[in-house]
Length: 219
Image (cartoon, rainbow, N blue to C red; front, side):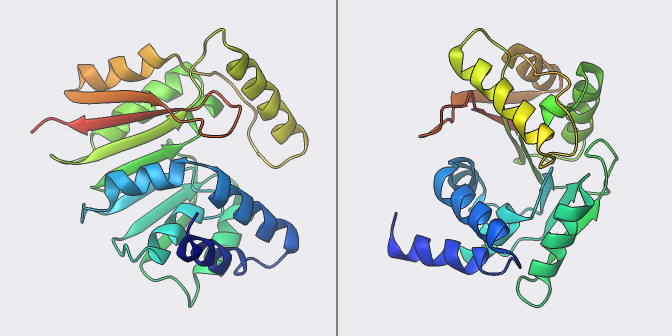
């Protein structure tokens, strides 16, 4: 990690009010590969970004620290995390908006969509509905970036299931896990609606069963 990257992360972390949240922000931004992977896919696009399941707003703030100033709307069901995101954004990061609502509630939006670690908190039916809704919000040359844990028989999947149990038990995650999707259930929906989807592992140095789904609308 470069010194510039370390400074970016530190600036974001210090915006949060408590040591615990600061430590969480540092650890997440340093170790989670999803932020850098998403930036590589979005940095050349001038389309707005909808962040479904935005949590404390880390991705929006990371974009701003990199000089990416496209409008960002973040939505999350957890009022506490949205309030933290709003407080950090106030007076520091422009053109970001955070809404308390379920990811399945439609937002008037047209642009790129990111969905990090959200699908498994929804039922199979709700997952399908969300993905179909998202496809209607993405224009030609737009992209949907999903990080999720596909249901399989690997030890990584079993460890991820246990981690999710702990996160909910300790009340960091408000919603319990309902259904981990299969990779096919995600790619099939996008294919039916005219998207081309690329899937690749994205666990980085973590032990979790994380995969990145990149769905592009055909021109």
